[in-house]
Length: 460
Figure: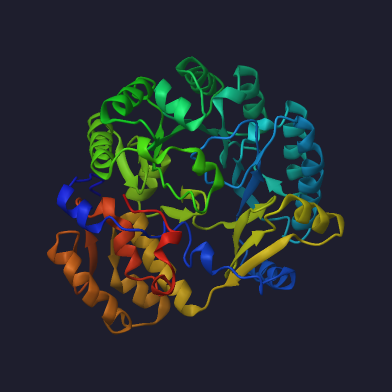
């Protein structure tokens, strides 16, 4: 398939509005507190009846210092002792959840995120993985996708070696920007030497894939300064890039209030940076996966997209669409059977629920038939930039043109603008439309009109 993008400034300016990132459909805003532990247990029973492999996500919320741009669920502390009671609770939750899932279901995918997972010391990381192996069936052939997010300021070659020994084979390095002025403005001071020492250590230890996280749109960024950062990273050729658009929403995220609004690049400057990113990465041989992700052509993400097997979940793009996802730890979100489930978001409440022997369910939502149909449509579009009506009609026993008559009518304007091509057989997103895939997906979102768009980040 064609995995290229075309940068059309006029289209981007006209379609740049707020909307979901579709790491799920329905989005997390539809989760409600009427869904509790009993509902989750019913979904686990259904999941076991369906069978299949599992995916595990562990949320480690602690960070040593705050990054002003951050919108994650985190706990800022320099006191490493704070991790001890949390880790005790997390290990208890692993045992509780592990007892509910059939032991024959192999964990094909595992991810530690946060926060900063490497906030944990070597003994704690080993204890966490040992507990996971006791209560879930992890692969021992290195063929699963076991990944971890690391802060290079908290990681050295010994840490990397231990992570590999624990079974991790994919690593994602937080960076954001190397420019000193930008780093000072967002309170994240990080050298190139620290960063690339971790990346090269991961390669020496046999990690199969390295990813580098960058953010464009940060204060004091310019096209030239961000190009310099990008050039430094390209010299080390990570397998993947995640280059996120900074969403400045200080009303929702308190730490962002420490960013000086006047220092943020203008909308026009952000577009210049984005265009430069696409140009540089394409010239370097990377392919555009979608949203904020680029990968080398032989990376599993790029291969999965070409083979029509790419998927999207709460961690982003994934190659394991067949896995039910179990969220572990405070705020963690999972997808089990026909439901999305989120754990309690406050540390004290999470610890209290675990101590009382309760699954720490905060809220969730059970998908109805229409939700699952629209999820399939949105997932296909956002992962593969095309949609064949016949496969949807067969899977859901509908006539696509009748069921989605209103949506197809809305897409006529996008077709005239060159974002996509409509035919009786399906939808084909153009190279110019790929950067605006969120807009196309929003057409099929029945909940969107009910929501305040300020709750979502801008598309570009």
